[in-house]
Image (cartoon, rainbow, N blue to C red; front, side, top):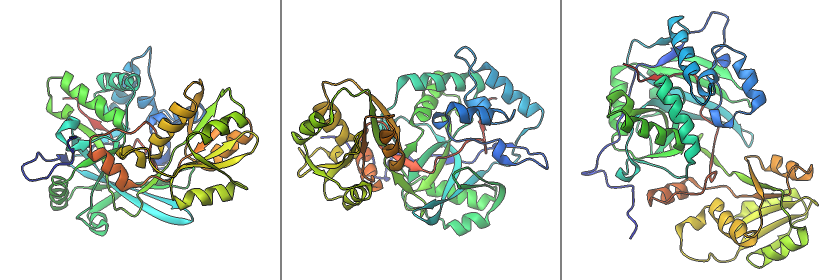
Length: 412
């Protein structure tokens, strides 16, 4: 029988989430924090990177500044920033509060995260659990960055069940440091919490929680390896983390759609193959397809072909009782990639917006769009709690946690 990783708290080890002396950007009177921050390193395209790096103190000069496969230049940049006081270490040991206000279906929501350092533990201890597979090559790159800079310049994004501290109390105990709006109309505000009583409450609350990694699996696993390779040095036993309650009003989980290109199969054959494994319904138009998917009566996918054909393909019954069948990305992998297209070679691109996915097919950039349904957060928790990892790009937590508001230095 598979052992559940989410264990009872009684007698179990506890999560250690603690405050730290953060390295904080020091701004000139006419400077805005927007020039210092960036989205996570792995979602930045070349054009955006050029714009970000135009500022000599932008975080991408650390996170995306390799020289010959090493990050020695990034380490030099960090030292220069500190010596020139472009980054200054907080005198007090603090937690930080990171709020993101954004539009979702016409409603403005706000997601609130606690920023601190999280103890690094192997997954099998059940205190910190993953939900997606990782890629070794990516971890090698992040390890080189840690080795050369001894600094966490980007935060992992973690979830926990139920905050015991009202957001109003967190806000009243904090001091706002920065606020800015990005190009997607997301308002980012970053606060410092240095009140000893509130710090104690946060630490006590987190001791009873299990943390699910929402985003940053590669960074977490890299940080753990770095810690183990450095003889267990205490400061290196923690990773910069932003933790959000699963019941936060701004906790939005979106699907990541699949775009296939270089697919050597015509539409007629594709549909015939689909019908061998799925029930396929023809949709009149894009709104009809989205409406059909939203009903979520079955495990199914939206399909858009280059001819403009739109279809809903679904299973009337699940093949077996494997818990992963509740995850659309897994069903897509097993049914479409392995069975329908198992003998074909093709390229896969990932897209968060179903409108963009449709447009890329219609303008000829892709051959087929596979639209996945909205994932449910409780299902992600359930699968992860069983110690099962989902296929990569199974989830998209919106908005992304941005980098550059605070750094965690592990140097002595």
